[in-house]
Image (cartoon, rainbow, N blue to C red; front, side, top):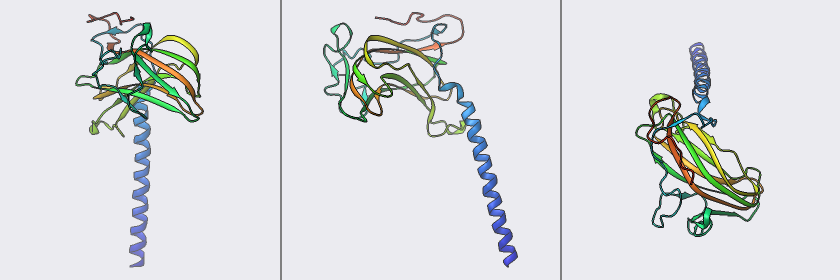
Length: 223
């Protein structure tokens, strides 16, 4: 009986070891599968193939509830005369160490595009932080049969701005995983010791393609 128990224990340990090896290999395969979906690509050679996916990206619709805020209610953040050209926009204020804030809009995708081109206007005032202000595109999927784990299939970030930066357009493109059924576009600032103000306005996201061919709108709006 002792020998049989010992053999059984050895078999269980061996099975667990094999399972661990398979898990690690599948994780490496998964990481390689998503490797190209976490870095921005050059938008200049892309063809826009659809309309702007963002709702109320200029924040002029007073009744819209499309934008979600991470740490506070939207009251006091979407304001008159803080955007470009004295228009409505978003203002985020960091007043304490370890300050950060963000807002986002979720977009459902029945037929995910190959690429999404994102543009946003950002201004900073006395912004002192380790990370800076930037825009993020996060892709997610519920497709379990495609080895997609934890829902995330790509996170792509724009360049970051800080200090006293006048209105600057952030423009980048994110390759979209074919399993994606939702993207979220974030405006984000802070992390670490952070103080100052950041303003966002005119956020847009266009479906695009790396292939040549007819386009529904080949000119990204640049108001």
